[in-house]
Image (cartoon, rainbow, N blue to C red; front, side):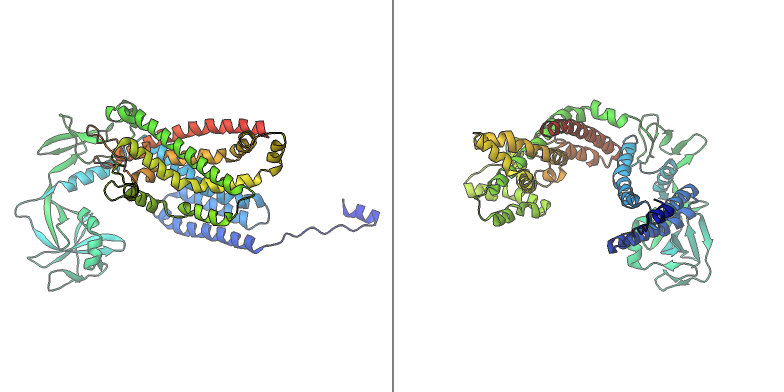
Length: 522
C-alpha cells in the first residue's frame, strides 16, 4: 500500500522492521572475513613469485565476492551456504578428484617428479669421486631462503660460494681455526644442529664445475666428482659405462636393450593399467574375491551385532518399570567414551594365548588370534563391544520419539509384546535408523584400525604371506601398495576407487529400500 493510499484511509504506514544484529552474527561475519583476508595475504606472494596470474585473478575475485557478500545485509542464506560449500569442496570434492586422477598415473616411489627431476637425480646420484680430485672444507649457509655451500680450498684457503648455478669467489669471508667459515657477507652460516636438520637437502645439492660436480660428503667436507651417467637430449637417453638407457614415456623409466630400467623414473599417465592390474594380476585378483567376501561378512556382522545389542539394551532401559536408568546409561557408554585405538590394543592383549585375561579367566588355552576362525570371531566381538554404545544412544533417542499410544493400541488389540515390537516398534526404528546403519556399514567396511591394531590382517598362511585371514580390502591393499615394494600411490588410489564403488552401490541400494519403508510407514 502506497503512502497516498495510507493518507486516504487515515492510517499511517508501519515502519520497516529493522534487522537485529546479534553478537553471533557479528562474530561470524568478522571470523569469515578474517579467514578470507588471511588466506589472501598468505597466497598472494607465492602466486606473484611464480607468475600464476590466472590463479591470482581467481583468488582476487573469490575474495571480493566473499567480502561483498558479508559486508551487505542482503543474501542472508548465502552467508550460511558459502562456508559449508567451501569446506565441502576443500575436504570432500577436491580429495576425491585428486584420488581419481592419481589412479590413472604411476605416482609413487621412483615416480614422484617430472622427467627433468628424474634426470637430475640420476646424474647427481651417479657422481663418483675421481682420483686426485680436490676436496673442500664445507660450511652450509643460507642466502635468503636458498641453501648454498661455502667451500674452502685447503691449499689456497680461498672461500668460494657454491650454488646450483656453479662456483663464484666470495670476498670477506672469515675462516675459523677448524677450517669452517665463521661468517660471510650476504649469507647466514648454519650452526651444526641447523645443518644436521637439513642433512637431506645438503646431500642433494650439487654444484656444477667444468670437470664434474661438487657434492657434500658429510656436513664438513665436499668432494668433486664426475657423473657416471649423463643424459643426452639428442637421443633422449642416459648414457654411461654400463650402456644406454632410452626414455620410455609409457613406463616413465629409462630402459636399456635388455628391458632393465634405472631406479629413478618420472610420473606419467598410465591410463587404466592400475585398474586392470587389480583384475588381471594373479597375486592380487586371486585373493580379491575372498577378501571381499570376508569384508562384507565383517561389516554386516558388526552392524547387525551393534544394532541388536544396542537396541536390546535401549529397550530394556526404556521400559517404564526400569529404575536407575541414568547409572546404567553412564556405564554403557564407557566403551564409546574410551579412545578406540587404546581399547583395540587392550583387547589384543586380552586375547593373547599365553598371558591373556580371557584364557586365564576361563581356564582355556586357545590361540585366539592364531587361527582363522577364532581370529575372525575375536575381531567381530571387539568391534561389536566398541560400537554398540553408539547404537544404544541413537536407538534410545528414536524410541523416545515413538508415541506410547501406538504400542498401547497394539496391546489393546491383543498383540503380544513380541508381535507389537515386530510389527510396530521395529519398523518405526528402522525408518529412523536405516541411514545411520548404512553409514555404520560404510565405516566398518573400511575399518582399518580394527584390523591393523588387533591382528594386523593375520593369521597368515605359509603359502601366502600377502593376505591374512582377517584382512579387509583396505588392509590388504595397504600392504600391497605400501609394503616391501615401496609406496605406489597410483595403485593405491585405483584400489580406493574400487572400494568407493562397492560401498556406493551397496549404500545406494540400501537407501532405495529405505525410501520404500518411509512410503509404507509414512
